Length: 151
Image (cartoon, rainbow, N blue to C red; front, side):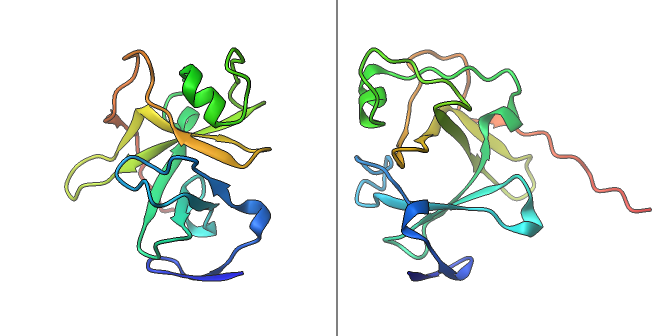
């Protein structure tokens, strides 16, 4: 299937690569189908492109790219929405992928939302933006940017 996007132009999407947000994203509850995309020029970044709204695309990084020691914490409700049993505790890497949505403002260092990462159950292709039940991380964690060095 081909989709026209506002930022990435036309994209071809294999249905098996789409993810569903059963309750949408906060502020975008009507948008439930997204596709995570990577661009060769922007290694490491993930573009979460809405399949319902061409202009809606979130820029994200894996949480451990922001904090190598990141520890996942999910509520029982989020665990069930992802398709796991309520008492199950999914682990990063083996069960789920967690992405931090980036915030970019001109003249400021980029920040990442580690308080409410997007958690994806890759096998079930289901996702939630999971607000942590604790305050271990913030919603504007600084992202270290390495300068390019020319030789």
